[in-house]
Image 1 (cartoon, helix red, strand yellow):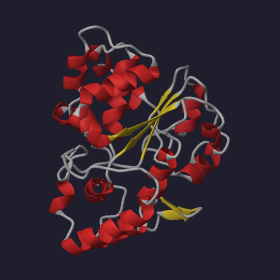
Image 2 (cartoon, helix red, strand yellow; image 1 turned 135 degrees about the vertical axis):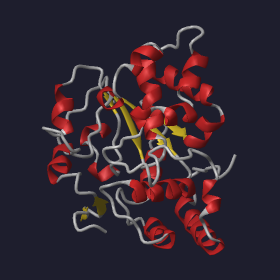
Image 3 (cartoon, one colour; image 1 turned 90 degrees about the horizontal axis):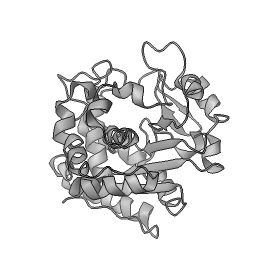
Image 4 (cartoon, helix red, strand yellow; image 1 turned 120 degrees about the horizontal axis):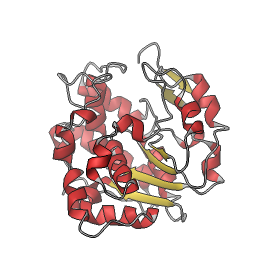
Length: 287
């Protein structure tokens, strides 16, 4: 990995996740009326955040489009270029209700109060094979992360859980085990792809933010992958070299079949079976 990547408490972090951030999370004040979106990387974070913010303004699509996506939510994990203070400091000053887009932190680095207070928490899970491919291209295009020499090298790192953010299995199983808590809504990326309208209704009901009559179809259209991919606000050129790969690349279910070799697929299936045994958590790997 890059020299600036480092392991803290068994989890690899990028340089932009400063020690000050990890330390601050231990005492970060969570509010009961917060809305949190937590995901493993490349699992539909930006997509889901777009839906939540549209619901927050009564499904007024034009109104939400006037606000830069980076200004709608707080992202606590990193100190981004150009920031004059840490996001957790800025977020602590925001009025309620706050929409906190993330984190990608594993449980050991999340704000401790997320286990004692009851904000609304969305967790979005995506099948690990498609996550692996999407994260591979994120590494290729991200100006701040290592570019792996080959897919084979990257696959081994993903298999071992030795990537920025740690193990896919650890994070997803942790939130799956919390899925029955009243303030947690566990969503699957594949279900959202298959029937986005139903997912948006479920999210609305969970938040208690009703969808005005006749607005659902407009929200579904606005939040389609194709529509969001065309929106320059979601290209994040400050950290992504879109000539290598756009931030929003394909968004499809089953793209992993174009990358996993037969032997890699067999090895990963064996690991998946071992890790997921007895959990009851299942995924669809194609639609």
